[in-house]
Each structure stands twice: as structure tokens, then as C-alpha cells.
Image (cartoon, rainbow, N blue to C red; front, side, top):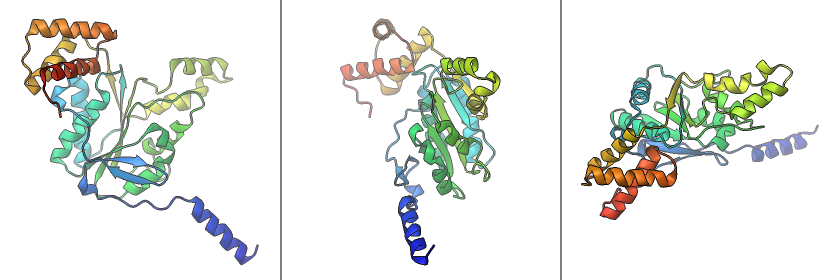
Length: 280
């Protein structure tokens, strides 16, 4: 092959390769969003979160994740964490609230949100964060995998790190409605049709085992639901009697056919609007 041809191939490969990403000013924000093609970390001017004290009924998960986050922020060993369970029970809210609380004392603790569909590029993101002085929580919300979904293989770059290993300054916090990150019917189908059923799903199911912390979130009771709303009212200075709040909140819950922290906040948002109270 001629030297001229080799130069043409080299130029073509350069065009195909993504340009190196410019690192943002990590001191300018506490949270960032990862975007591939072109690779970049976009700062978040204001993180959408609530005070951790307003999260009711998740005390054990809160305390466990808080301890893990503080350890990590201090430069000590910490586990990847999977927050799984019922919808609307504060999984993502807890991650964002704890980051806000801990980063107030440890400004070098940053959060980087990664979308599930961008997991294929996660290796490039890790390369940018490696060897930085900051500590990074990679946050992947609503993580799950379906049939013929190969994104889970990219996730192992975060959990296991391959040959280089996961950077010491990076930990992964993920939320999911599924404990094993894949639907039960998919697990049962692969077990029933595979030549070696025990091996057919082992690779995918074992992905959740790579999280050192499993924190379960379960549907709340009616008392917990009402306590959440009362906590919001006290925090924002809304004066409402217990009987009125109970009657309205239960009716609100009944019209939605579910009871959760999200439903409690939705009722409170409606109540605040009717009372002329701004939440921003």
C-alpha cells in the first residue's frame, strides 16, 4: 500500500473518531449531564431536587446511602448503589437530595447524569473523569433492559471497569423499578428456551449483583402518604386542618388509583396553587 493511500486512510479514521471533549469548569456547577456525539459535559445551573428532610418513609435507605456518599466524598472506599422498587417512592429524589446535602460540605463531590441510551459511550465519559481531583457520582435514572438490549454490556465498564478498573473517583448510583434490571417474563422465557437455562440469563441477572448496595423502595401506607403531605405543608408554611387535608388527600389518591410520594407531591402542588403559594 502506498504512503499516499495510508494518509487517506488515516484522515478518514480521524473524521470517524469523535473529537476529544473539552472539560468544563467543574467549579462552576455541582452537577453535569453527559452528552455524546460530540462528547461533552453540560453544567446544570439548578438541580431539580428537594430537601432530604422532606423525604418520608425511606429512613433506612436514606441513612445507608448517606453514609456511603459521605465515605465517597471523603475519598474513602464506597459502593455502587442500586435503588429499586415501587414507582414514585423517591428513588431519584433521594439521590439528588443527598448529593445536594453532602456536596454542601464537600464541594468537590459532583454528579454526572447519564441517560440509559447513552451507556454505549460511558467508557469515553470515564476517561474524561479519571485522574481528576473531583469525586463523581454517575447517576442513571430509570435503568432497565429489555429483549435484545445490549446496553447492559456497556454498564459493566462502570461496575467492573475492564482492564483499567473503575476510576477511584467515580461511583454509580442507579434507580430502577426492577430488582434485576430486566422484566421477569424475559428471565423466565430465556430459562425455558435455553439449552443451559442457568447460564442463559446469568450474565444479565448478575449485573445487579455488581452493585454493592441494594436499597428497596416499597409502596407507602396511608399514614405515610398523609405524613408526607403534612411535611410539605409545614415546610412551605401552608396552614390547613388535619381533617381537610385528610379528606382532600385521600380523594386525590383515589382519583389516581395509587398512593406514593409522587402522588403526595402532586396533591401538594395543587394545594399550593390554590393557596397562592410559590414553590420555586
